[in-house]
Image (tube, rainbow, N blue to C red; front, top):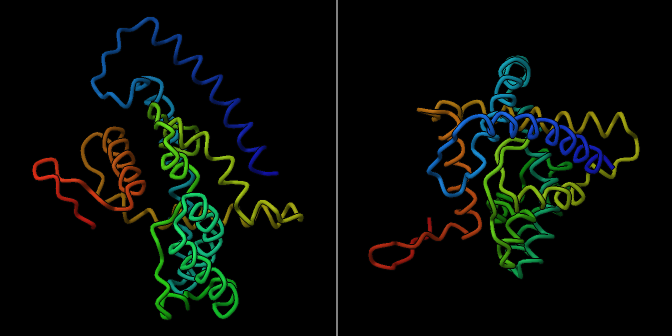
Length: 244
């Protein structure tokens, strides 16, 4: 399966890169004050690699895609891959005992996969089946009580935590694309999914300010906390809860 192959490549790359960074850290005195990022020196090295690769390859390709592809086609492609993620959402809804959300997400998957022309059209939204924030196995592990672990930056994949990183193989196996037998078609679908996701993130870059590493790390950790808590934030002063 492509998930296992990709994971093996990432782990191999990580071992070489992390060993090199670790040797460099032995010769320097790193002092960091973020409790969730004890491996910051190593993470910054991987972040620098990812950022350079993105600047020279992924970002230009994503810009070219948005330039030559009509907006309606972009929306359709994004909808298709969003619909495929509903399979993962439903599985994790059930594992987290969220039966109401599982029913909603199952309805979205069935309606959009049929009436919505394989997900090109989001017909389910007009029927009152709202798009959820999404669920993955990292969130499921958190609900089961598994600790977050240190923040890590994965080669090619970007921000994560130890818990979320270990959950990735399960998420990959839950994706329908990985079960396409025809390898060229599977690779094309995977590439299109990544391209569509990167293109969707272009507008978000305008909100990045200050040190990019710190901003993206804090944004990722805050977003994950928000998703795990299902958008419920506790007020430290009054103890009230607000659902955003």
